[in-house]
Amino acid sequence: MVDRQAVTTALAQQRIELPSWAFGNSGTRFKVFTQPGVPRDPFEKVADAGQVHAFTGVAPSIALHIPWDSVEDWAKLGQAASDAGISLGTVNANVFQDDDYKLGSVTNPDPRVRRKALDHLLACVDVMDQTGSRDLKLWFSDGTNYPGQDDIRARQDRLAEALAAVYARLGASQRLILEYKLFEPAFYTMDVPDWGTAYAHCLTLGEKAKVCVDTGHHAPGTNIEFIVAVLQRAGKLGAFDFNSRFYADDDLIVGAADPFQLFRILFEVTAAGGLAASSEITFMLDQCHNIEPKIPGQIRSVMNVQEATAKALLVDVDALGAAQRAGDILGANAVLMDAYNTDVRPLLAELRQSQGLDPDPMGAYARSGYAERIVADRTGGQQAGWGA
Ligand code: AOS
Ligand code: ZN
Ligand code: ZN
Image (cartoon, rainbow, N blue to C red; front, side, top):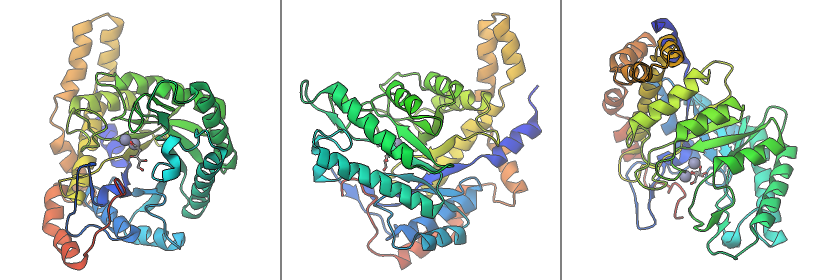
């Protein structure tokens, strides 16, 4: 039997982190479409993220990107976040948008470039000290395009050296979260292409190093929930970058392309206690809203994660376990599918009402007048950073 009260409590405690770059203008390498009313600075991104939290109640922090979100006074940005009802979250480093990084950042054959990249990563930890952020998320665009272009093993050595230096700089409660990506921008080798490579580096580094699973960073057909289960079992699942993909790293709204996959992932997470108060998994979105409006896009994303989580929590794990032990293949599968096929929208609407929220976050935001206000007040919105 599923304990409905426990499901509601778990859903009420869920925390989803929003990416600051989701609020800026974004696009593909072909075109960035600008939208009226988008934030002109990090303060306005924080204000917009606050709206998503105000209407969903489960998105109380915003991930920052350095240098896109760099400000003179971090305390002031922290205050703006708190005024908006949220806090500053994960710090994302950027060692991919500089001419110097053509051959890589921390894995570059040139020691000068490696030093420059490492200095940026260390500077990000300085920022974390000021913002109170727990996590430093590292994604490297480093890799090669042609066989023989560079020494694969030497690049791993350089990567290990840089990671060790960053790890040594972390405070007691800070973590290094290493993100992997199959390809792009490099097309022959990426230096951190998969969970195994990320896991191996994190294992060497120590307890404070964990892996980030970006759902858009795998080959088509990859069983992501298996990776999640293995990492979580090893205590190395640090964070998610949730998004949807149809083809490559599409960064579309999470749950839009494959809600069943999202459910399967969240089932593994919840079954292994990943939603418990003691869990240290960061549930982050990593998306860009190239053509749809940004704040509603984020609200929809948060709701999609909530819906998949609710379904995952509704799995009757006792019945599932019994069927599994009995070797009842179809029975076990039916238990899972029963939960997936449940319409959880009424349950979530009730939960919101019990929290004093509107049961319909999308409608409530549309009625709030905020979208009209930012269009009137802001001109010259900032690009999210991609293609800058
Ligand atoms: C890049 O493909 C990765 O998904 C990054 O996680 C992310 O989009 C970037 O770090 C934003 O700065
Ligand atoms: Zn990502
Ligand atoms: Zn990505």
